[in-house]
Length: 287
Ligand code: MEV
Image (tube, rainbow, N blue to C red; front, side, top):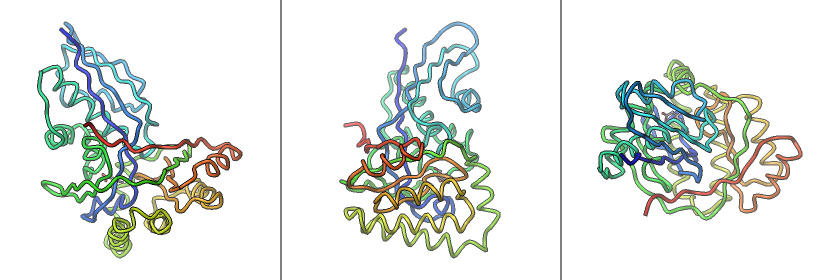
């Protein structure tokens, strides 16, 4: 039998992380890094060969696969556990691989519905924004709900540079810690929500958008999810001429994104500081 293959893309949250878990909107972009899953039927226990380093991969796979009958191959070029949606990319890739094997062609809505239980095996109670953008591609306005609001936005013309702290935060723990600080931090969450609405209007203007994203970082620091290493990378990017910079994802480690029109000065500053950094392009989605 021909193996089933499926791909899921990573993401960056332009703005709105954490607040999105509590009902505010977020804007996410799919990136040109992805995870591919290959499912090969075989007799015996389901086995996994993976370069995805998260220890929850097998448990997550077994939420949709039987304990017997498959060889599963997972290959990713996403940094795992860094806020770039590696678990959502895996979930979407697995759903698509399974569908390919069954001769089924689910649309993005159906992929979202099937991938969410896998994402929950990683993160407990995710908002769904990572899975939504991994399934659709492009730039997405998202608001949690049943069903969630998912509106495609015009793809931005500026670039994003990603700077990696080299450490990981635990999304489930960070989301729980933020939840435990409510209602004290509700005003900060509401300010993030308002800022996301402003960012939507400023999407085509990297200077105005950048300022909003830097403000979003300050609010994420206020709710307790930034770290000195993330703050230092934001400062490094801004000093090197980025229009704006913020942590991206749950925080506690992971990556910073910087909005730039010329990526080289930020990449050069990162290189001389010994920081891993790379330019990221938008993945527009399947045609
Ligand atoms: C993780 O990429 C973003 C968070 O808002 C969690 C979620 O939305 O599920 C921190």
